[in-house]
Length: 228
Image 1 (cartoon, rainbow, N blue to C red):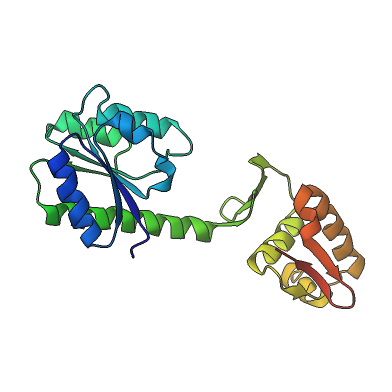
Image 2: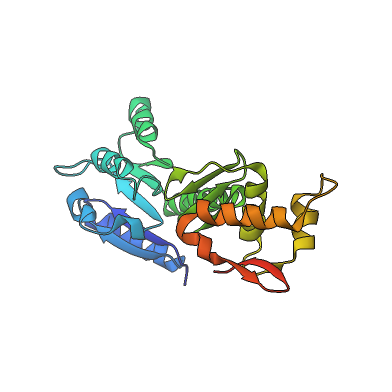
């Protein structure tokens, strides 16, 4: 079973059934809603993609999309607009709201399936890039590009050595590092470094990462480890 969940929102019931059947044939898990109001009663955050009609009853697809984009929980949920409104202005409106794609009616099912796959692929590739650029443990986040560390969304000041120690731990959770290994990896550019220097940095690091300080454990006779 394809793990991706899709929500189809359109007031044309026949079209919803056709889309649901074909998407489920491709292995997606698909739910339908016949209005924006009905869709918003669902937990949108559970869906990997929305196929959203623009011209519906009281709430249009554009208005629903704006509401989703203003909510931090659903701000990044991919949206493909399905609509008969095909003017350049309409398309620009859709993309300015944050649409990931815009398909004009009438359309072929093969086109919809291809575009769904393309959007999901782009989203997954983006997630992979983000995962590479940051290291996380619950609410502790390290950004490798700008060398920042956030705890519960608040930036914590780190020295270069503290940052490198934490990076070493988060890249190798549950692995014990001896003092010699840490000296080689973190202090490789310095000639003389005392074991005490490592202990002092570990103590400061534990304090700075608050509740996660307890995750940095000492293995007597072996070294230090970040335990999950």
